[in-house]
Image (cartoon, rainbow, N blue to C red; front, top):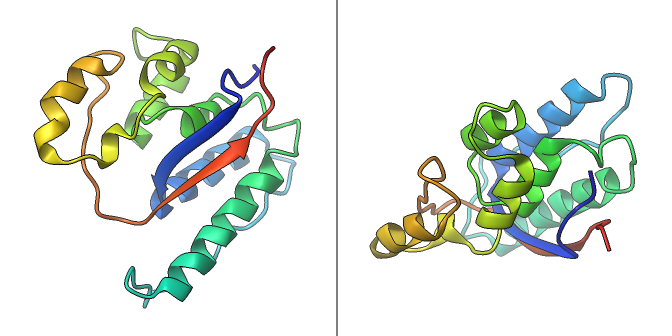
Length: 154
């Protein structure tokens, strides 16, 4: 499977990176994946140095795994980088337990930052998303937002 978008910009929580790493490790048993930055029990969103260090570590993690052809076909990776689906929704979609495919989820839910808008925007966004299974929620946690060049279909 090729990435359908030339670049990808998503916001993800640290816990979602942990989930992605676990899924990739399960699907590529013999391959050693890079570590995520250490979880700091004293992490503070108010400490810009800590935030920047974590973001750099997460960026490095993504850059390294995107260089490995063994994980590039993983549906969880595609959903993680190209949709705004939650972990539960990504798992269901990757396992074929939704009425939409991975490609449809990426095409229909990947455009915006639905999960990080205000509560007032939720009813409008729910209609714009791929289907009724694709919920929009707000979050105040740290996410990684970056543009990453990914292999794509021409």
